[in-house]
Length: 225
Image 1 (cartoon, rainbow, N blue to C red):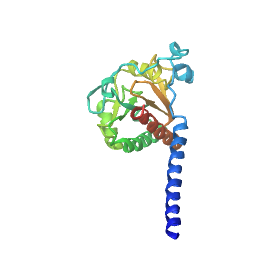
Image 2: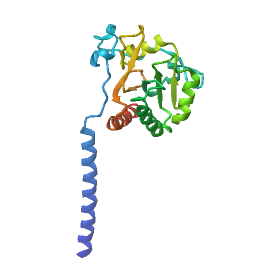
Image 3: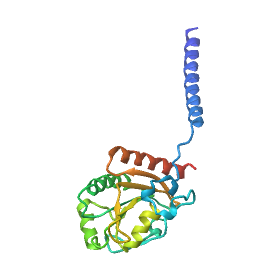
Image 4: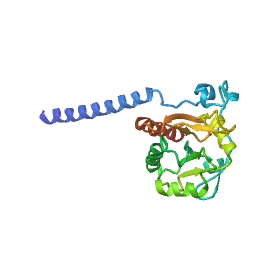
């Protein structure tokens, strides 16, 4: 009799365990799948967007580009094909927010250095000052991994138009030439289709943590469509 009850107790424990697993699986299946928005120019602060795009509500993507990185190599959209990447705007002599942004980007770099699907891209807003040699010096000082992170310089008009017409992340200067710009603290998350999926304050630790969480959501969306 005691043997019978022992077997019954074991069977009950197994049944209870299976029930818990089934309930857990059903619960997860019923949870809404986490997704990220696809940002359009009409969703962004108009100060950061070229006036020709203020009312654009769909189909916004990053335009083609051709710039030069810290190693004197040509970098185009082809280098980022089928990649998720994080972009920002900076300049090497910036004494205020850039050092904080760069420090946080280095931490992001270290967290994604073994992930071949994710890259980084930083654009200089003072390309006349940030020569290839200057970018290389900065890259060495900050610990940039060349295979993960391009610091780029080039034609100022092209960078200006990328900033305001593609990444929606830079303000106009207003008191300089036609392509003068004031960069912001924004980090921009871009998906494999070249769409903007998030904006984050690159000087704020909590925002950087959110970026890394959103990056995981975005990666999972490709692994589990």
